Image (spheres, rainbow, N blue to C red):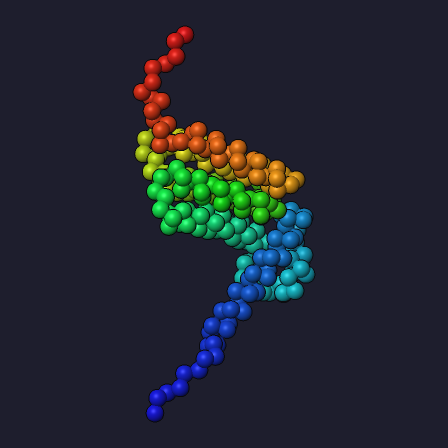
Length: 217
């Protein structure tokens, strides 16, 4: 006789789902507390109260307030990456092969996410974080520059590297400006201006400047 298989989820799958739900709940509460009070003035008790979880559960999943803040930052960065990757993939699927157009699609998705998660952008740009946060942010930024260089096929020479670094900085600063906007219309204007600027700073043609003679005195 064939062995019947149960359609009910296994105990391990149920436990994993419950663990993931608990983690999401704590992160959601941390987002509310940190964006309202900042890192320094927030407490584990505040997050526990908002999440309806327990102190033990928070420490089990994150280790403490500093680790919770860094986990929230990491989730925010992953959301940015997923937004940009999805936009680039969709454009590629539509047949686009121009690296600059793909880069602009990713930048536009990043800027859109900066508006949608503007509370987090403002939180992470105000300098109020745990020890080591600035190093984490700089490391993330260097990796972002590297990924952009790969996408653009640039960065193999000093001019290309400098241009990609400038473009990455422009997008990051534009994201901060968007987070500070009062309305979606203002945010859309900042995004549009930023994308036009990126086109003017196309790293694929930036090297052409080296072949131009200097302007006469």
